[in-house]
Picture 1: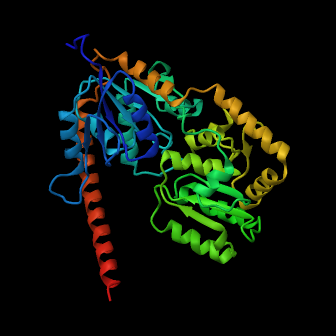
Picture 2: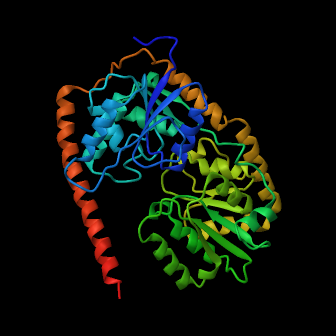
Picture 3: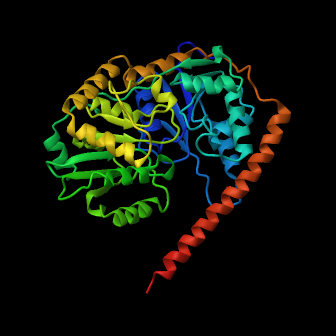
Length: 414
């Protein structure tokens, strides 16, 4: 039985190597709670108890067994999982662990058919995670509707809008910001902050940018290299050369939160046009730095944002995207209106610390509880067989990729 005098503790399962999960966990650590983190990638977070569960390259210990061991050995009164479509989430749902679990969905983990086109068995495992959750936090009505269609009742969901760190993301001096980011002082700067992946259609942004006919540094496109997909940067560089705009494009390696804020402060417009999304923090970060956003008119955006008021919607093709960029470059009234609309929109949202506090309040509800949503034994046994197959395939693909890398490196040696 939990002692009321002891510190409330939470086991968090999530990829703390990702910027947004790391920022959320960092904010939670500032509250009166003890955190125990299980993560798939190393993190710079200064937490007392962090276990990095390395999937590894060998077949001696399959990834799911490493996760099972880590979960079994983990402390924490309650479990909080960030992102349902992951090894840690799958294993926890099948582990038989009796602790209550609060699931924080991110978007892509439940919009599977829209985004990643995963294996049907991966979809099945992810839905087991969703069924196992005692409470699910969602950041939009669209995500709630998607979960409802999967059989999740309203009393197992709650709205939690994740805010941003307003002490970092705030207006700044453009001249000094551009000097820091080594960008021309008088250029019109377009910034693509989303993951460098073909899913985010950065190539469409490049084609639209080409229609601005950049010359002599009057227009610059800055592309973030965050979580870069293999070969995609090289594809974009070849595309830029073929369009005659290679010298007008700059790639920025992964940036810290402070560097991201400085990049926003350097920008005239921020662009993100994936075909499916939750509600990305990049939109809020740009708003906080008083930069207008251009986005595709997705349903999950339209429920919260208003065209030409706090956002610019553009169909995700080069012509419409270029028109939106040109409008923001030439129409100061439109630009200023969208900026002020974004500032007003943020006033109605929590900041990062308030969001973390809300999540902990939800977790506290379950501090003495064992789950009533335990996955049935037969389903768990079937799930273990599925994970064994995924583990073998994963490890073999890792070995193959490593072998190809070694052969490629070896062939380049003179």
